[in-house]
Length: 68
Image 1 (cartoon, one colour):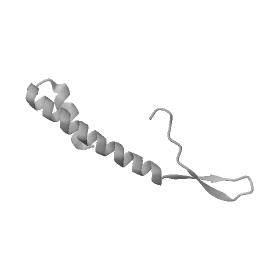
Image 2 (cartoon, rainbow, N blue to C red):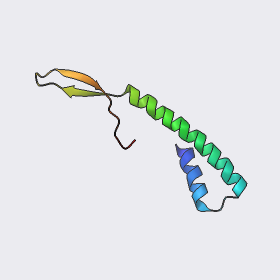
Image 3 (cartoon, one colour):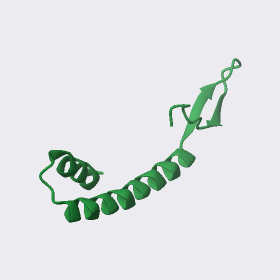
Image 4 (cartoon, rainbow, N blue to C red):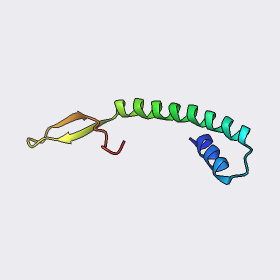
């Protein structure tokens, strides 16, 4: 994630030659895919603990927000 942020900062600076800009874009795209995959894997592992009316606890699956 840090590398991806560094790439975005460099691209936004406007001081990067076009050839290097294209290389950074390709690298950033690959890093973004890695980050998205890791996030999906983490979401699948997350469970929420909810308390039932009778006082017992139960696990429910992670619900993804509609913004994602």
